Length: 212
Ligand SMILES: [Zn+2]
Image (cartoon, rainbow, N blue to C red):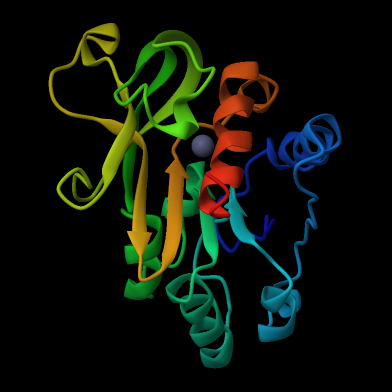
């Protein structure tokens, strides 16, 4: 779990780093190694990792070429990737990363309570998550709608923000032999403490790790 930033730094990083080990302790299905130190992302550490999670990362993180190769190879060869919230506001200048996370952030037109909808209730990541629910969030839009390239699991109900259009908020895809999941929620501490968000993340860890 990487929470390093080279751009905007979310206040909710503290909550994220608190909640993920709590979920690990509750579910006993995974353990978390949280780091802010890019140097710890190496072929060796990735070799003992099932899922690489970019949580609230931002900007042009200063990975060297060998690290980028190692991350890309990790996913291509069957490693899991999870991106959360500003993981799409990260590494714009590394197109392979953009393919792994699925889209790049464009803007956040709505910071308010709104409704979100599960689009694929049968997907393992949706298990135990209500079909629709309301929450306070900073809702993202993306430079390109990722829908043609990914499997959308969660989207914004546009009517709930007085808008029209298609606004995917979470999705899966396969990248080589690896599985990737992105969830655009997570701006506020309250989201990280929200059981409906937590359920998606714990399910996503199992799915991206290839256990489901
Ligand atoms: Zn945010």
